Image (cartoon, rainbow, N blue to C red):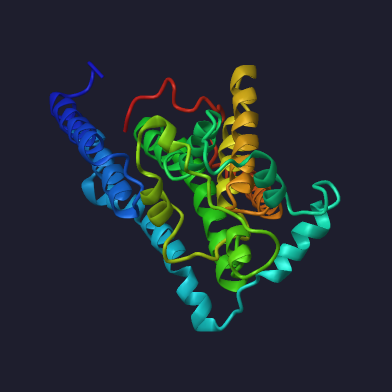
Length: 311
């Protein structure tokens, strides 16, 4: 940082101070608009006195604008085209696949009946809440970091994020499906409570309601198949896996596993949704690698920008 031009140091310092102040007074931003604003202003600050022009920064991030808001409005598109919401079909798949393992119940019901206590929040639900919410922060943090550290790797990671998001978005439109809590509201099976975020209360951070209303998608309540939470976690893991050391690989496995547990236990997704999300991620990774080999756009070394200078 000491080698940066003075103007860039000042710009980044102002940006960091404003973000810290926002988080301190308003809390962690989970809404689309604020996240985009933070990322764009960060890119602009880190690009001061560089060859990257302001218009280029906006052009680079337009696809992410479209994806974030496209996800929110995909439910309206499903209504427009008249595609029915799949509720009983997905529930039956979950029950037929996993009912034999979980005592004749879907995994969500089994886990909540054995682990959920409405009068007490155990310490481990803090990790459930943190992992669940990380979906709304971690991918965009990685995208933003790579943008200012290594533009070549940013292109590769962005390609994967955009591709899996587009694939999921198309599926949400063509096959809108209700998650476990939605099925329970429709009278299918036993009662299910949305509890993926209640661990925040243990930390004394009252943001659970905000996360549910903003992060979980107010507009699209039936974007369950596939689970983009699981798919994005697998996407991140596959991207970092090739050059990751043993400790990081262990953490990536833990991250994906706990994400799946949080989704199923919290009532937000079926295990089937998570598996399908992982299949999407693996397919996207293999497709992107094949594309990069053919087009020779991938870098020869996968160092994640640790030795790179900001653009």
